[in-house]
Length: 272
Image 1 (cartoon, rainbow, N blue to C red):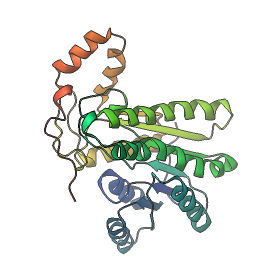
Image 2 (image 1 turned 30 degrees about the horizontal axis):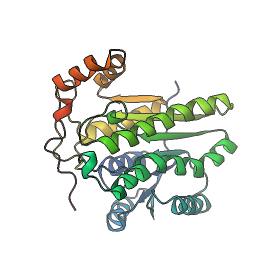
Image 3 (image 1 turned 45 degrees about the vertical axis):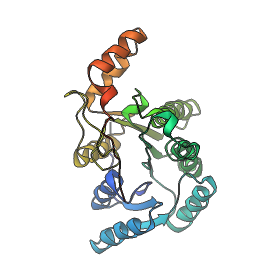
C-alpha cells in the first residue's frame, strides 16, 4: 500500500491537550501537517498550541467538549471555514470512570458514552461529507483493547469502546458498499497506555504489557501512514479473537487466570 505523506495535510485530533493526543500532534506537525487540536481543557490546549507554534509548527486550537453534539457541529463548521476540508480525523478523546457498575453515577455513564462512543459519530458526520465530495479522507478511531474484552471496573468504558469498534467496522463496510473507496478508516485497540488516564492499572501478563506513550504513538502514526484498517497493541491482543471461539466458561477462566480481571484493582486514574 502506498505510504501516506503528511505534508500540508489538515489533521483534526480530539483530546489533544495531553497523552497520545499531544504526542500525535507533535509527530504529525513535525512532518509538515497542519494539526487542528480539540480539547475541553482550555488551559492545557492553549499551552500545547503555544508550544507547537513556538517551534515553528503549524497548529490551531479549538475548545470543544466532544460529548456536546451541537458544539461538535459548530466547531467543525468553523474548522472547515477557516482551514478548508479535513484530510485526517483522529477521534482520540476518551474518559474512564474505573469503578464498579453500581458505584458509577448515571451522569458519569452518560459522559463515558458521550465522549467514547457518540463523539466519533458526531465528528465523522461533521467532516465526512467534505471527504466524500473530494473522494478522499481518513477517519481514525482510537478505541481500546477493552473494545474487544471486558474487565471489572470497566463496564461502562468497555461497553463504550465496544461501540466505537462496532462503529468503525460498520463505517468501513458502509463506505465500501456506497463506493466511497478513497476514504480509509483505522481503528486502534490498545492495552493500557501509561499516559495517566489509566494510572494504577497494571499489566495482566507479559503478553499484555502496559505500553509507553511514545511507543503507542509511533505505532499509531505508522498505521495511519500505511492505511491499516486495524491496529492491535500489542499484537497479542489478537488472541482475544481466538478466545471468543471458546465456550464462555473456558474463555472467562483464561481471562481470570492471566490476571485481566485484576488489572484495575489499583486504578486511581488521572488527577488534576
